[in-house]
Image (cartoon, rainbow, N blue to C red; front, side):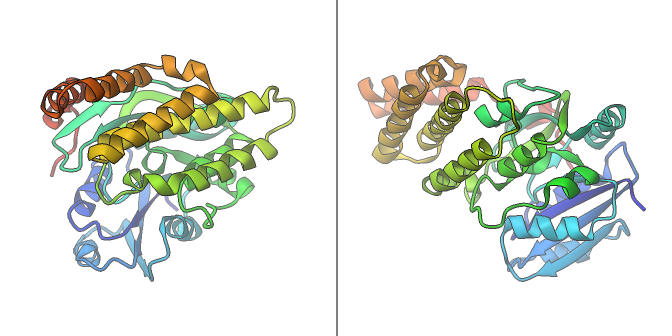
Length: 330
């Protein structure tokens, strides 16, 4: 029986799936299986998967049913004591499993381990480090106030016993199902952090990262459910709710400005930034909130050409070429 099961839900990842699996095969931890749930891919993803000669790779193909169902199917066939998740276009550094496994072994009270994250461009040529924010122990209120585990779907290693205690992913949620699931875990288990950058989370044009208008309904469901089911003894739940929704609006403001071109992107970014400030004024003091303010001012007062140059400079100054990281290449 493998110690760790790595569950990969994949749909039309023909250009990235092989690199994703190679990043697992190069792990310094060897006692694992790779459970790939092919969620009805219509490209060459399945052909590529079937060409992999590794008995640890187990491929299951189903009719397309969505990522939550795919992860649940992976959990149902996984044999490991621990379960890790990795999306079909993301990557890990070579010591990711080893360090997260060691952290959970040292902390039997913890149900979940996570690491710090790089954000990677769609073509993989640039990455930048997310802010090194992490919490350990009872993280429920921190996680509810703002999801600090960047790239949850490719980041976490979870004790199977913890999964059994909270159940599977909620397939009724179109977005934020991973945050909802981690909140349920945090209500019963401690979390432990590996304060190293080990996950490469890819921003792609076809990912949920760009489906901004569909986010709000799901996120309100997740937050309201978490408030209703919060462990006893947590104070100021209404304040935590406001802060949580404000952080979501701040995130959406950033997405609109960086992912939606033209007038709509700017106006919607401004709307969500003001909404965040109204709900929880202190949110505007965050570093990336201040960067958003500078960007919006530049786009309001300067010509599109000059504003574009400033935005590109701010964005590129935070990024680094992929070859300067531990990005795993074949």
